[in-house]
Image: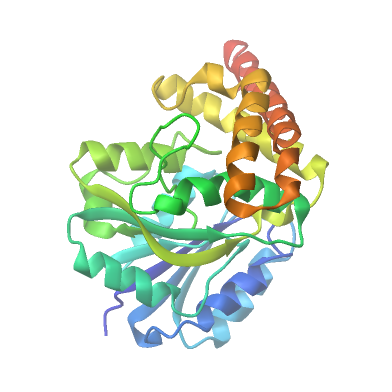
Length: 304
């Protein structure tokens, strides 16, 4: 029986989280005979590949496991795409956890909305983790109008990216898959943009999932993550100068954005911790700017 849904998992050095992610897939109430999982371990140096292989050998969901030397997210996602047999690909990161109805909800939404190329559920917060909770507050606010989410501050459209997102394979095939030059981050923003340009709708849905952001618990984790984002976004910016507004990514703009979000978030969530958002935004935009500049220097000096 041909699968309806392909779960695409691209990971690297994810031994701390991947078991929880796979367990949440196994618990899905969608018929397992209509599901498959395509794993891509992109150059892990820990036990990720062994864990994934052990699961693949004993689960009741068909699985394909690929191990590659590090190529990056664009090539890894295309490896899933080329080997997917389902009508839809649900992208699940190794640090995400799906409620048991998530796959069913995504399939039902896509089948009721044939014009939609990409949909995604809403990220749920993790209240006992301060750094991660602060990281997710803006997304929680922006997605309160989940059908057409926009930034409350900048009024720009909020697109879902890939983690937790469901992509119609027919639409992905039409636009030629992911751009393999985007190896770090930005492949999700690029695919959203090209999907819209091809005439496909992008919509959120009301189902939810948990996002752990690589186990982000400390300020060091936050800085490391956003330095990596800055490097990847610089590559995206060279391809498409309209991908984001560069002045809005600088540290002063980050502090201002955090301040405005804190005022809105307190009115809606009634939590005092949101007044740490200006510091949170200022720090992560400082790290992002450092990564962006480092990537530019590396490009200009021919080091990548």
